[in-house]
Length: 445
Image 1: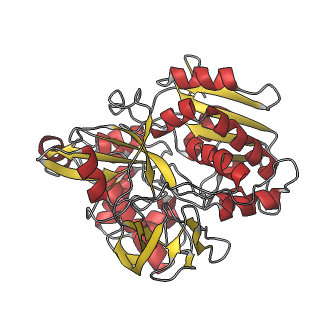
Image 2: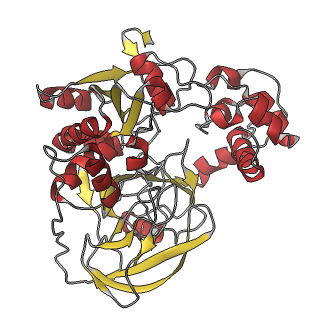
């Protein structure tokens, strides 16, 4: 779909972008915390299996946990140091999960040794997928879905187009923006691996028009022999969702209950693509990732390459926060999750940290009123659900009806309905609870 010459989709919302504070700040290296916490489950699927013991010395980049089956990925030491203990650690979901506690060596140079490279010219598609799994690569846009699983095309399916998602529509976050400017060549190397692994014939990089410098740089550096193009997208939330991106760039619809492959497309976040291009030629694994640390309560806002496992408390102490900091999100304010504890660590799926003061946080605690049937949520929903009706069913705990009759499981929890609701009804939170109940009961999706 095109509007005024720009690719886009129907419905959606326009929250304040709030990106000016960090979009022009280059990526900086973040220091090592005295103790890093490494949950064995930093991805959707089965947790990794620890292959180290307490008291063992490890080198930066060394495998400390192996994949436990196909739907799992490896985990690597983010620093050279000692495995101080193996135990439980708090997670973003509020529960305690198995984790490794790594104490970095204070005097170490923290160099990363190369492993066995994945040769792009000779590697088969399955070998590339195995290398991606061994590198511990997951979706860095926030979903943390194992990338090799997403790229494994089932029998009878095919993808003619690879989409690289550089939309970054979430307010405040500029992680992908800086990656596109500073790791441009890594992105194109990653595209080559992804095209060979999937068999897709072409690639489209979609970037929202509020990043003209990224569009210009990508087009200027685009290799002539690469079957790829760079497209500008209209600024609108949630442009970066897979279904919206497919509609905007290809004019195709992913059917209800379907996957991008049902529209013959595959979507990969641009930071994920860059990490594949950065790691695979050297046989390395993910030990760190780029995140944006921002928000009204943050003093030293910026884009940082931060070691996996850095505790949130250490991170906030380093950048400095206002005394009246009230709420901290892992991610942005639309789809991010409020941190239940400052002891939780940065994981592979953490794309940003956004901190708000009392004044801003009070707006999220506004009084909830009854639904007035205004229809704003219907106009906002990008997949044409009826959030008002779903909310009523959720309050009545009619979860099976929500799933079987009202397409509850198609909701990807973008929060557009909650954002526009004048009654301040927490619709997306109701839908999350309903979906959890549906999955637990094994109801039809």
